[in-house]
Amino acid sequence: MKLFFQKLTVGVVLRVVHAALVELYRMDSRVKAEFDALPEGMSYAIATGHEAPTLFVRWEQGKLHRLPSLDKAVCNLRVKSTAHSFQLFTGQMGLAQAYARHAFTMQGEIADVMKLARLVNIVEAYLFPKFITKHILTDIPTLQKNPLSVYGRIALGFLTCKY
Amino acid sequence: MKPPYFEFQNSVKLLCGELSLERIANELQQLGAKAPMLLTDAVLHKLGTSGMVADCMQAEGCAPVCTFTDIPVDSSLRVVNEIARIYRDNGCDAIVAVGGGSVIDTAKGVRLVLSQNTDDILAISGVENLSRGTHIPFIVVPTTAGTGSECTGVAVIRNDDTGVKMEFLSPFVQPDAAVIDPRMTAGLPPKATASTGMDALCHAVEACTCLQANPLSQAYGMAAIRMIAGNIVQATRNGSDKQARFAMALASTMAGIAFSNSMVGAVHAIGHALGGVCHVPHAVAMTILLPHVMRYNLSHAAASYAALLPALVGDDAALNTPADNRAEAAIDAIVRLGSELNAACGLPLTLEAAGVSKDAFAQVARVAVNDGALIVNPRAADEQQVISILNAAF
Image (cartoon, rainbow over all chains, first blue to last red; front, side):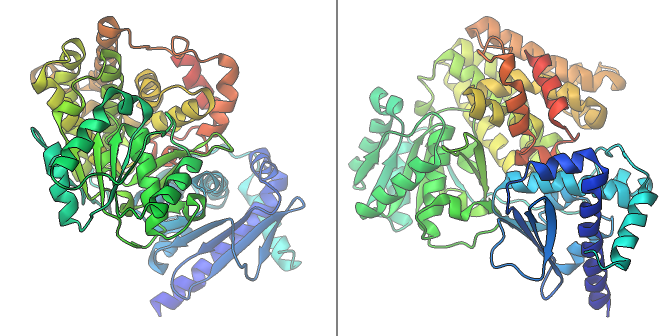
């Protein structure tokens, strides 16, 4: 039951993270700059454990597309267990901490993970309250927009099946 | 503070001290090897350093069946793939690498290509993503006392197409054995002794203070710092001092074990970029950047820097320093060490002295922020912050 709950939570958070990246591309200049610097067709796969949710995204024609599956992503991250994924996606552990604790493996170039890490850090700064981010980020990125407006856009996006 | 979780691995057998080279053949035989390939660079080949190793192997019945001597100063992915092809063509069954960081990291790359049964190392790049693969017996003989690469689970290899130094992290790049023979560093010139020693110091400092630091890596790192602080100036001034040479070689190895198990930080991230973009030798970049990055990190790492002070200046001097000043005092001690080495051998202490132009800073910063070492630095750094560090080091 606990594992089912963790997988369910991780699956929901992955959807929200993707939605946040889509919205922040238009709301935060640093997110826009990171995406605009990605090569066309850049893709990430994030696996969160055995038979656990996976996020496949590809950057194409100025949009971050979430895909149902992907034969081979350019950068593949695999979190070593669902328990670690649950910590990572619920604000108990940042990406740098996950790296320091050997919580994931990666196939591809480390430079691509660094780009993703910067994006995730910004997303976390918007989505999580400060008492959480101060524990999981070495430095909290300055917010360019009110987090409530980001949540509002994400909610509207889900309601209109935008993602 | 102890981390909630950490990993520690050092599976390398160390052969340390006199007549170590004479034991290589026996080690190879125990590993089941009969036809080793010797890897080195042109300078060591010309100086006869690699020849000394080959002679020792031959004398005990395990001569290299082929030797590759063209490993460039900055290791390259293309050369890794080429050596793997030559290894297969010659029916070799083991690798012996004689050299500094570039030679050893190239050899690690070759071993990865061979053990994973591929032709292109780029196809297997990543972090902890490989299974063990075929065992290729692998022995390294470091000829500098600095890289610690003989004990690390990482290979840093330059991508010829992008100019970026790539990191390949896997426990399976660690050699089976490392041979620490004082004869290998006896002829190292003063400037190289100083810069590679500062590289080792940098490994130890970053290993003890980055986000992945753990009690075991800190134990190795602190011991390395103490040994380097006590011997680097003497080894630089008097290269024939065997005790100082051996101490530096051991310190370098211990620092390698430390950072292999807790990574490094911004000094290496920026240093790799300076090497890739401006071709600054790695050890020189480390020497120049270390105090400036420490000052940048100070607000986030004061306690861990303060803890380094006894190893740098001795217990009594550290105790006599007010607790609030110990982190700054640790940085000052490293600056003083650099100045002493500058006076002893002309070791460059600024980027300007190393021939770097400010015009390159933007490109260096762009590359540095994508270097994996930055992820565990105690303080985050964006491109502007990296440029500010570079300006301070200019």
